[in-house]
Each structure stands twice: as C-alpha cells, then as structure tokens.
Image 1 (tube, rainbow, N blue to C red):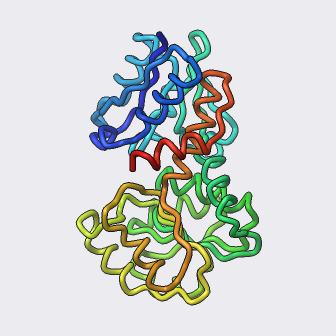
Image 2 (image 1 turned 90 degrees about the vertical axis):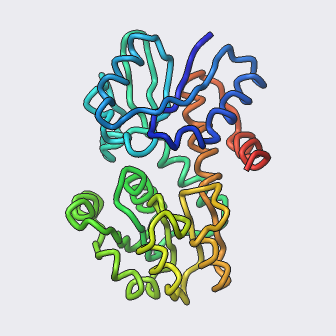
Length: 272
C-alpha cells in the first residue's frame, strides 16, 4: 500500500482532504491511504526527513508550510518556483519534487462560475502562499489590475512586487473595495472569532461593481465573506471547488489517473 499525507498545523485534522482522496482511491482501485500529519513549524525539516525515510509516496502541503518546505526538495516545478510556494510533493524514486496545483485549481473554480476576469480589477486580501497562487491565477485569467491588502506591509510588498500588484494596508479595505470587481479572501479569517479586526472591516465594505466574492476557506458556519456577498447581491464561492480541482491535479500527479474534479467536489459537498 502506498501512503500519502497532508502536512500542516493542527487544522489538518479538520480537513476534508483525507476523506476526498481516500474515497477516490477506493473508487478507482488504487492501493493507497491518505492521512493527516500535524507538524510544529520548528519541525518542518524533521517532517521532510520523515517523508523520505518512511517512503511516503506523495503529500499535500497546507498553510503555514507551503513556503517552508521548498528548501528541502530536490526539484521544483516552474509554477511552484514562480510562486515560491508548494502545495504538492511527488516522489519519483529518491527524488522529491515540489508542485503547485493551487493555481490550476483556483483558475478552474473561477472559470466554472461563468464570471470572466478579463480586464477586471481584483482585490486580494492576504499575502501568504495561497495569495501568490491566486494572484498568478488572476493574472493568467486576464485581470487588468490586482490590489493586495495585507496587515503586514513588508510581507505584502514582496508579493506585490513579485506579481506587479498594488499594495494597501488592511485598514484601507473600505476605501479600495468600491473599486473592485472581484474580491478574493486568502487569509484564514472567515468567522468573527478568527480575526476581530478584519471581521469588523468586512461588515462595512461597499462593493457596487463587484461581480464575484471568492473565499478560499470552507466549512464555516458563519462566513463573513458570504454574508457580505449576500447583502449586496453578489455571487459567492467558498474554497470547496478550488480544493476539489487542485486535489484532482495532485491525484493525477501521484497516480497517473485522471479523475474529474467534479467527482472530488461531489464528495466534499456530501460531507460539508
């Protein structure tokens, strides 16, 4: 049996990825098992050594480790190198390669909404590894302007510079939001208790020209971004479609088997 895993902090135990991948493996007859591993940030190097020593065949990497694992890899794909962030590890013999399926998964999730990003102004909240994938994706989808809003300007500046985006401090969200046609949350905040400051800002946003609100998080009972969209009659998408479509890409890299992303999405929705 081949073993695959999800690397992240304690939040991995709330992830639906194990259910999704294990279900698909069983359906296609792949002799594999997908398990969550919670790792302390100071032990990422040890975790990567463990993956090699234990013969783990593949892994997904989630926040906050998408950038931290890069130095421990033998190879890295062009997209992952551009982002400086990895979400999928693939073993080829003794070689451990880093890939990033977030970009393709995000793009497919947006395209399936029917909303075109061509020529649009996009406001991205957050500047972590997920934000990098989103910004590259919206650029590839033809966005005219990208604005990054982040609490830490130094971190935001690196991302904005890398992808030719504008940067604003988080407290300027109310000023910038009316100009945005697409709003994307890449932070971990989707409920009031997850970030009081951002939650307060979200409630006051006015977005008269917005045609899509996209939150990369999922499974929240009270989603502030969804409530924002509902109040103003804006279509809303949470992170389940992106999770499903990037998972289908990871699965193909690991197994060589092409399973439609909608099958992964159906499993997620039946469990959410």
